[in-house]
Image 1 (cartoon, protein in one colour):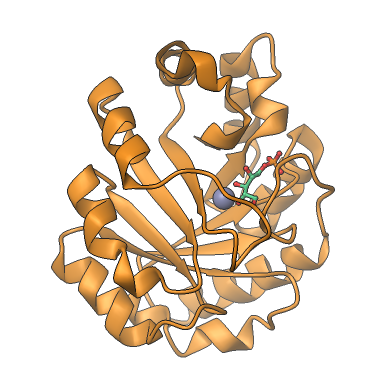
Image 2 (cartoon, protein in one colour):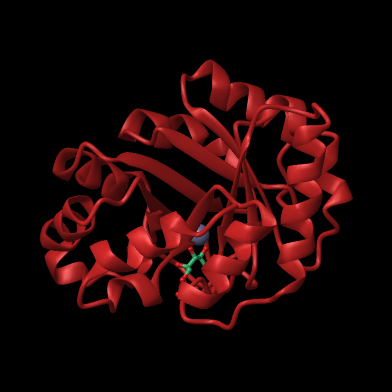
Length: 214
Ligand code: DX5
Ligand code: ZN
């Protein structure tokens, strides 16, 4: 379970992160937006560095940037354990994934809802994580696009057939119902912003989904 910090109360990041850590979150998802690849702006390496000082949790930086290749090093230096770039970005995808790996971080590749899953298939042998977007990235609180379920199934099938050694993560509109469907389709990691941060008992919410069978 990966809480997305986007939905946290930014006046109390330390308390919000501790709440998710204590509740048993497995990693913390950090949404980085450039106002160009997506129509919104969030934060950069400086905030990732501050979050790094606040927690020992695994940090996954989801880079919604047109030119992620220019910044991967800064995010790893800031303390990101995993760096996820978009296949729709302008980066040289294989070279940027290799660079992330050389820097010592886990290599993530994400695809937007309109992008066919076939487009990431050629890269499966050089990623540690595939992030299936089930909303158009840019904003929290949007409705889940069920077309992502078929992508998750296709990725799980490719992995079974030996295409690579990666985890399947899903991001956008995840709640108890959509999260369960994603788990059943084969997702390993569920990213959740608004639903999880609004839970009175996030531990209970996360363990219910963790128990949902893949
Ligand atoms: C969307 C981000 C998501 C977002 C998810 O651009 O990539 O990580 O925070 O938020 P919810 O769970 O509210 O859809
Ligand atoms: Zn995200």
